[in-house]
Each structure stands twice: as structure tokens, then as C-alpha cells.
Amino acid sequence: MLSIECTEQHTGARISGDYWDLDELVSAVYVVIGDENRYYDYHGARQRILNVCYNLRKAIQGEKNIELISNGVHREMLKRHNMIAPEKNVYFSVEILWPELIFTALALDDFIKLHNEMIDDSLWNIHIGIIRKFQGNVLDCLKYQLSDEHNTVISQLIQNRTLNYFRYATQYVDLLNLEYINLSIEERKEHLAAYAIRLMIEDEAYVILKEEILATASVTKNEIHELPLSMKYPEHIDW
Image (cartoon, rainbow, N blue to C red):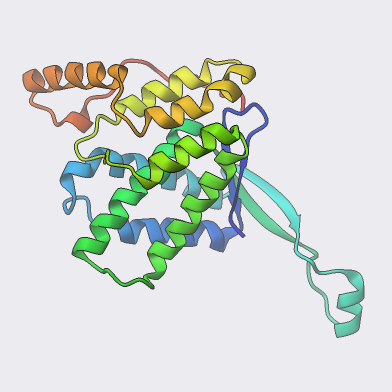
């Protein structure tokens, strides 16, 4: 079963599951976000979602975390059925920074709407159902880190969300990631809600950053999503 839990230092959340849990999620995402040429003005958001999928794939390949989880089988059960079977399953997991994970959950909503409008508007679309469960897990994990007041605000913003990630300056997610990493654990607990909210509104910092990126893009003739930030991520993150 796919699960998402906050990391020990509140730097991000740990996504874990068995091979089929993670593979099912990644496969559903690939279907819903579609070909890279279909929704070109969402290319920045699409690329960030794919980066998370890349990390999930790395986890499946055993390049991240591996743990053994009890599967409910016990010796008496095996004796009763005269069989030999493992009592634990292999689970894979990977940590994702909180701003990155929140952005991913929100951006997937845009692609679900696009998929419904252009590909398949069935209420029983299995791929969308898998992604909705993932989004629910993210929100459920997030709410346990926040106060009731902050949860109410964020729930209302999600339900009434008007900002989509059409031609969004996704470099802003990097900016938030790097800011968040540099906070103390106490500051992360205190300000996590603010970081989630900043991903659902165009605040002053976002507007300034996007204007700078657009100015550079007009000179270099790059698309907005093609210009990286000059800031670098640390080689080691204390999760």
C-alpha cells in the first residue's frame, strides 16, 4: 500500500510502497500528463512531475531506501496451510522536499483537468483514480503537520484554486525548496503552511522572479521553463 509520511527533520515527505504500488503510480502519471508536445505551455510543470517520477523509478530499482514490512503472514498461518512464504514484503521509498511534493500534487490537478477535457472524461478513469489517491495521501500527510486553522485555509484554497501552472515559472519551486532546506526544524514546522500557500498564489516574490526570467528569455530566446536558477542544491540533505 502506498504511504506518505513526514520525514524526521520535517524537510520533506517519504513516499513508500512495494514495487507495484510505485510502478502503478508512475504509470498512471505518464498516461495522464501525456506526450510532451500535447500540453506545451505546461512543459515546466510536466518536467517537475517527471523529476518526481524519476526518483520513484530510482527507488523501485533499489537506489534509494529499502525496508522490510510485515505482510500479515505468521507461522501459525503457514503451518495451517502447510506452506512456506515470507512474513515480510520489500518496500521501497524515497524522500521528496515538501515544496516539491506539494507542487507536484497541485500540478497533477491541472493535467487531470486537461486529460478530462481532451482525452477521457470518464468518472471511472482508473489512472485518474490512482493519482487522486496519491494527492489525497499528500494532503492527509500535510494536514498532520499543520494547525486546524492552517488546514482550513489550505483546504479552501485547494477547493477554490484559480491559479494553474500554465506557463508557470517553475524555478520558483526551486527557490522555495532551497529556502525551506535552510530553515531549522522548528522553522519548518512553523512555516510549512506558508510555503504551501505560496504555491497557490502569485505572491510578490514569484512576480519578481518571473519578470526577471521573462526579461532573460526575451534576450536568449529561450522558453520560460528552459532557464535554470543559478543557485545549487546541497549535496546532502538532512531529511
